[in-house]
Image 1 (tube, rainbow, N blue to C red):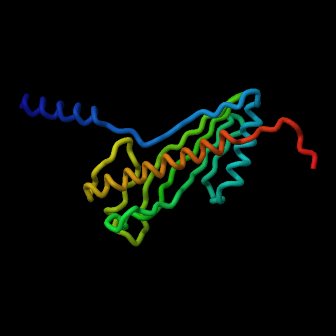
Image 2: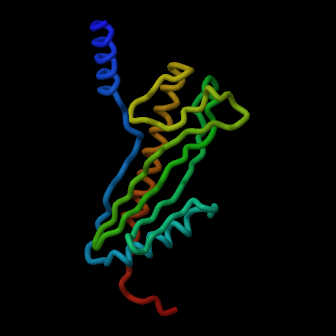
Image 3: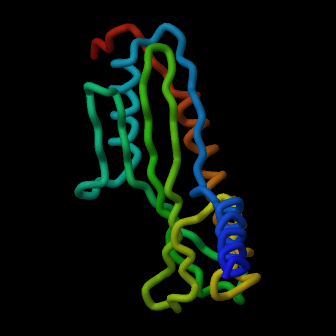
Length: 173
């Protein structure tokens, strides 16, 4: 009985030691001398301009200067053997504004394949390390492609936000 208890305890410790976190990225954009409310308004305008509207997918709080947007990008697999993974990569875009800077987080990357494809080709929430679910090496290959797609999205946002201008002069048109 003691050996069984010891085995279960060791197994539980081993599983906790290999626990993974959901894939996420964050970065801070510095905009010296720009008040937080102006950053908030500009980022909110950017989100409203650059995303299609969908009910319930955009949260903004002027009091805490936080914006959260559900976003998605199409995923096209890089090979015929993994074509059943074709679908979308959805994620959360969160922006927190402070005086002179704002923090951007991309979290909860989730893969969903097309409904007509096999359910075994759906990876769900992406973790920090690849997981072999039902399709072994194909799951790992797709995870690597999805991670590269997620990193490309991060760079798109980083470039857009770093190049965002905050004119302090009024626009008298």
